[in-house]
Image (cartoon, rainbow, N blue to C red):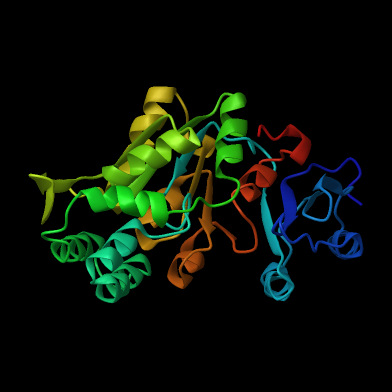
Length: 298
């Protein structure tokens, strides 16, 4: 037991709220094996945590074992857990789809565009070139189909509105920073309660997509620039930032942020990110900050 020793880390064990499978016996066994502090349940059968004075040497092995049980485990610093700035990717993060893939599917080039998207998000090809190539395949598409995609094909990642509402109720600021397009980020940001959004813009003439993107491209570097600009404006340090995303173009902000979480991310992104969540929804980001389910703002 930790007793009066100085506490440096928190071990968080999480799973999907929709399928609660976190057993008390497992949490106690891990706590005992690692010499942790008292267990704190943030949500019964879903999220628990205990304090540690070091990062366990067998953490990677335990992580792999728990993944097979549909559980995540993260060990992270105890100090400054509650973040003041949320920087969030949109596609496959705040929503469950890739907007450009859905739009391309409507246009009849879905398979080709989806393949390029997958390679770009895994870091296999440069983001800017991949974006221009995908948008060129949409040339001639009626812009009204964007609204059709929003209405019929886009679903929100569970927990998103709760994440934003809870952080903002505690003084947080939220920015949606996407390599996608303002035609999608604007309604998504408004629906979820983001304070602002930044992304790319289609070139549209007479309600028809020209197959071009307004420069400059909002990519990996632009997300880091957004982090720099917002922390300066809000008087914060990088440690006060929670960043979340799934693609290679998110890695810059994920590695800079005090808490950078790869959420259901591509393999290459998981390998480089500070933290990874595969078995939870967006409320996992609240549990990592020490919020209990009773504190959630719904």
